[in-house]
Structures are given as structure tokens and as C-alpha cells.
Image (tube, rainbow, N blue to C red):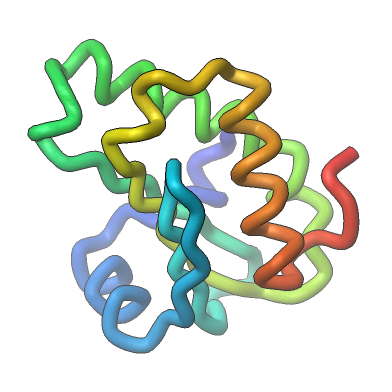
Length: 114
């Protein structure tokens, strides 16, 4: 995912957590609010109890690779955070992709996950 599509500042994370609407799945929680920049941005949050740094970075890379095609073709501008739950550790890549696509569709960020 290109850097311009990433949510990086602590203040932005706090704003999304405070004002965002939550969509849940056993693997993720997606928080979404209206964006303040001229493009959509996504942040990823993984708690330390998820596992080692290697495991946390692996799941973040997977989420970024899944979300990259959707970020470039969203119609409205939004900021979001994907909070990864411990159940995602046992999931395969295609299960993560289906789960995240379902949340993005539920939040009306994309129309289909192609």
C-alpha cells in the first residue's frame, strides 16, 4: 500500500477511534469515519499479545496487500483503522481477504471485492 493511503499520526488514530463507526468480524474490527485528506487512508493496529513482532508484522503486511487494490478505487474519502483480533492468527490468507472484503462492503467503502 502506498504511504499516502496509510493512517500514521497518533492524532488521526485517536480521532478515528473517538468518532468512527465500528464494524466487527471474528478476525477484525473496522473503525471508519469521514476523511480529512484528499484520499482515503487506512491504519492497522495489532496488540502485543497477538504474538511476536514477526507475527504482528506478517499480519499487517497481509492486510496491506489485501486492501491496496480497494484503496485506489474508493469513491468517497474516509479514514479507517483495522484492529486485528487474536482469532486472525489461525486464518489463511484467503479467509482474511474474504473477512476484510465483507467488512469493507458492510461499511459501504467498496461495492464489490474484485
